[in-house]
Image (cartoon, rainbow, N blue to C red):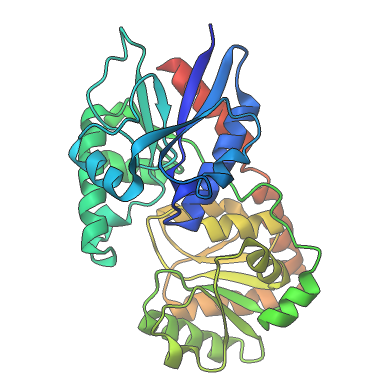
Length: 361
């Protein structure tokens, strides 16, 4: 008898977040590769046309693709209300909260539902999230408290935060994600950097989620502490025109563009404290680029000894960048530690641990 793990891949059909789409794709590949004898992986998706299903069907080794009769937008609402979705039954795993979190029988029917939360911002900093997204995430977490057999988060710091805010207690599991498989400088890296305007040795600033004012303070501090260093701003807020000045701005949407910029960087600066998994930091570690990050429980755990975690504000962060750039020895050592830390994250290990979790349930 074959056991099927059904994985919800809505992000590959209608992507709402490039990082969640990447995580869904990489985890599914890892689950297929790690499937125990007598087990297989199939995909569960919202109703969609053939074109939208193209990426799902590129995943080699899938046992099948099962579609809900409901399109994603309507399905999202149905899930938040606990209405029939056409997704439930058997052993179900979702790389996000997008899952049928309803009453099921794990003991007699062997039904399981496991979901993943990569970002706690809707609960810790609701002012940063749209009202629609906030309402959906809160509704889904309440449903997870009632019906999820396990909720996965990627860091122990996030597990502690979630345990304090919910009744999940012993159902929280920690399974880390990783950078995209094969994340590295592309072959056309020189041409890409020229097109993007990314100079070799730039300080790359992760501006995702920052306000224009916050970004302006960081850039001003860098100007005072490392006035000669070129600066590239990744994912600047839409209203950051004045704060950017003459600095180079770059969108993080394209993985090859990101790897071109991050591999060319002298330092990657993560100045914002956020309760989300640091995908850009993971990619930076994978490339062996030194990191300076603002102090937080999430950054301390994620970066570990692979980077410099700094208590204080923009001036302290900029001073730490300046210190790294002032010493070739310190910079080389930081790059080595970053690469060592990056090797500690693996999608294959995540796949093994997810299978073990379902076996334990």
